[in-house]
Length: 270
Image: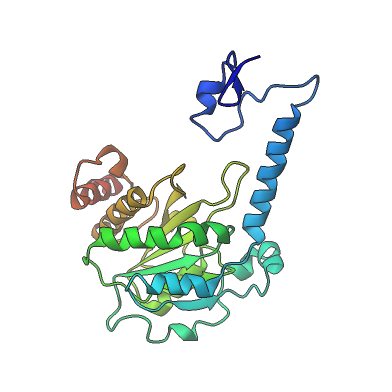
């Protein structure tokens, strides 16, 4: 049978398969999947496991962030002392081992925004995309906000950002973190935005932008525009989370302030 792009010409799933990383129309060989599909699954599973367990090269990340010219990053750790403990004890990943290194890392009177780059469940994602996404954020903010010294956090969960935000005395905390790898994507980043971070914040107090991994996922610039709109909206509304809505996807032609105001007004209504 002739084939195109490694798929049979009469494969009705081929056009759709080219538009998604989901496993669709896998076919079968007797009562089982074709050997090719089984091997693809095993390769994807191995990549996901590797992405979780591969440690972040913090020194390389510090050097990359320094090159952006926004300050020398501070490296902090959670209470999880190993990757195994991090995976078994999520609670330890949410609390810091020691934040004394952050003393003086904030600005006098408090900075507007603190940015944390965290390994999360995919250190590979942070290594691949963290610096590029951070550069896009800095470009999008365009000097409108005072930025605290960037922080790199290892063995980190999202709630660790609350401790860091308090220590930095920032108005808004942005955590860039490696997302849980799946069988189609092992290098995806998420952004969690918390306005007025403090201990005890919950997921309802945060906004999340997910699936950041160009070229197949959300691009750096698109993620940065959405984040900037949410930051502006949170500052107007005085809070983040369920009260703050992202309307940037339906108003891409509008400016950041217009998007933010629309998001703020929607939050007030709800």
